[in-house]
Image (cartoon, rainbow, N blue to C red):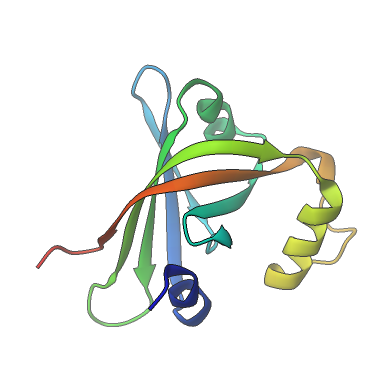
Length: 126
């Protein structure tokens, strides 16, 4: 199964982790990624600490835990490749995925951050 299909069909919780230039790690809950292709994923990010850390350290990890009894999911290692501030695109993605009305968030505080997938591992090694 393609990774994009996995995220379309599996429900769960995601956690994005990014370290500062000094190695201090910050984590935050994040929705499923948006896929540009099978090697590129994006997240809509607020201009907060995780986003600030990316300016000094482009590496991140995304942990996805499936909603089921057994431990299952994915660990994805990433490197930032670009960032877009296209508020129309962000608004469209938020409406499609999160069913958020167009007036509920200020779009100037959001950006679409795209990452190259470096490695995909299972949540738990067998």
